[in-house]
Image 1 (cartoon, rainbow, N blue to C red):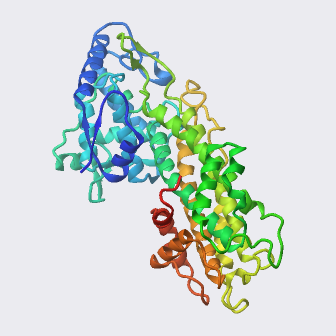
Image 2: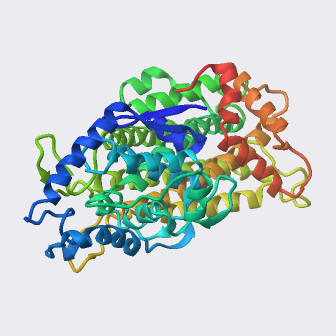
Length: 512
């Protein structure tokens, strides 16, 4: 099994995906253990002094003015975890919780938090045992970090609350730790606070969304190309020289992908035949511009994620010169913004795909295709309601594109009076990404059927490879009406797991 070694300088997006989705093992580097011990020595020295230090010998948030005596500090750390584990709602997905835990471990290992090495090792042990704390949908405002979600994870380290075992069974965390020979941690000064103060949930969801969107944007380029073919459009608008004079990188990449898919097609270039068109509709002609803008948004989001992966997000932090200083680095605004940007871009990509699907089904705009791509229109409804489903998905994505980060609700008696809502931005982006896969799948279903109805004209070899692979995956072709939901589910799975892209790349080579 792949092992990810956590040092002091952060981790990579591929490390996060390996741990969150593939169950990779986690190890602490010797450098990280040394840094943990050194920072802990600083905290221990401060804890022994009579002067109050925030997070070490004081209360938290609006209660930070109270100095806590030494005999109450362990209780203070336990209490902050217990009281902050106040989430409600459905359980969050296992991969999200694993990313959350792993990214908190990444910051702990930076040597800026003052957490003891044995606490960090317990975090790694819980991940390696496949134990997943029960974390709930609601509880984070995205400032002071993802407090409630991280608190539920810290509660598991203490042997309290509930967690899911590697077999998927939910039970008491204490029993799961005991089954795997893991001793619950006894938190000391600052450790409870350090386990809660991070943007780890929203960052983990950003990294996973970027991985999924990378595949879906390639898939959308493919389905846009198939629709262009099915509508007998022109591929001249994809010429590199046209995109070179508006040099947005994403636009150029998207156009290049579509051109690669369409190479060798007998269906393109018929826009001047029986019903001449000076130009194709925007949804066809401007596909690279829309998808490209989304790709460039992803590039910016990836840059933000990389910076956050290299960050140590905690409050207070232990600095290299031995100072322990309060700060505001836990504010989730940088991550929240790009999560919202991605939801906007995904909604627009879905919207343009739906417009192409509708065009394929409308006999007045499809350039000779049967109404709704039906076998016997009137007796058969064809794909009429598949487009309804697609439209409903797009409509929801437009609602999900309303930014969460533009909102703020004051908390903690006005001490935390401006929050990022980044966790909420991440949660709605996950739904948007799921819906985008479904929208692209319905365009694939319609465009592939339309191409097969164009008898006598051969599609591009890459297009044919996509259609052949889809049919082998249970995505059926033209014919009389049948129970459509299983076909659409098969198309969704075919797009979602990357088989569409893989099939096309057997002909085109790697897409951009």
